[in-house]
View 1 (cartoon, rainbow, N blue to C red):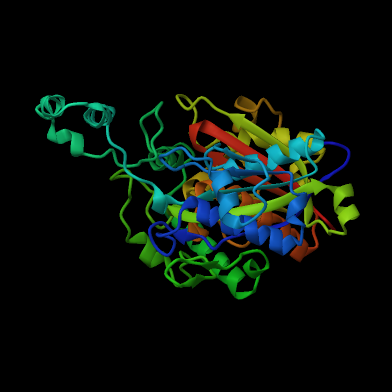
View 2 (cartoon, rainbow, N blue to C red):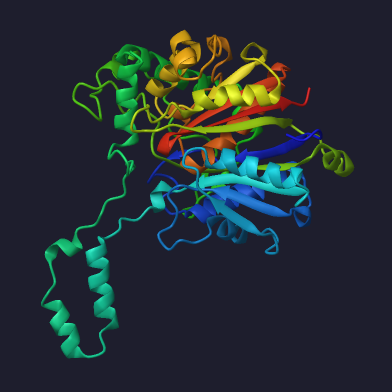
Length: 427
């Protein structure tokens, strides 16, 4: 990053909710608009000073709209703010923060909002290309005779929708199947996954009880008149006995269940970024600063789909000028408990360091007392485009609470991608 630090002034996220539940009548633009509006309100910035908005989304509307722009319109912020929508899968809103930071660093803009949104509830089933062409031909037919001729070629299969899915086009495997195979490779047991998931739920429940999330989670008024003020999927009363009775989801002999994986989720997040000097000029106190950002990608034909962040961690540490031991906390995105535990195995492995990373020693030892202290995506949920923003806010607020300095965010993403950001608290 530049000599002058890029400041995270603050921001918000909405409560995260299981798909097709409390936000079922809200579009991605509506949820994103709430995050944008409340981020501006929370930070106290004059909205007329905002130069650009970047928002991430993975399952965008079928009509291909610029969701960031539509969210801006929904937010009531000035329509003169340019907006960009970005997709880097699960790391989308971490990438929007890096993109806005880079534009600020380059002098192209002074102030920007980065965030993301996901509305799985709004995802629509699509029809096959053959069906699409058939119905388009019907619509274009100029005479009744032409229409009748086309109708005679109708096939019942045209009415069968292609249900939305999360498969890798390259391998044909879902992310869950890939994570299950990853668990086998790194020898992560079902019992370890269930124990990890249980503890993550307990930590998230405790964080809500202690007021941690109230510092940066905004309320959402839904179209049916309800106000959502808390994440909806946390299960504080779960037990290992209950978790152990659930059947594997992806393979009969697999280890991943509905309880040790993150659920499909709706939600949004947004953070305000500017240079440290600009914050001082405006009388704003930063929550923290972006110290470094690194990405990596692996060949998913030969490497585990979700191992990418381990390749990015050494890059991010080097860019920040620190070592693993300097970190006060780490937030590892919990797509699956199996993926987090496999990531930890790789971080600590001498063989992985030598054979894969070309390092003489392992990245470091993962201290459980520094890991995902307020729960992660397994209990909170994972709205793909918004999780990066959640992690930025969660990391900086936890550092502030502890009066500690450095935090690392690790996010695995589809396509064999990994993103890592190191944040520095304003202490």
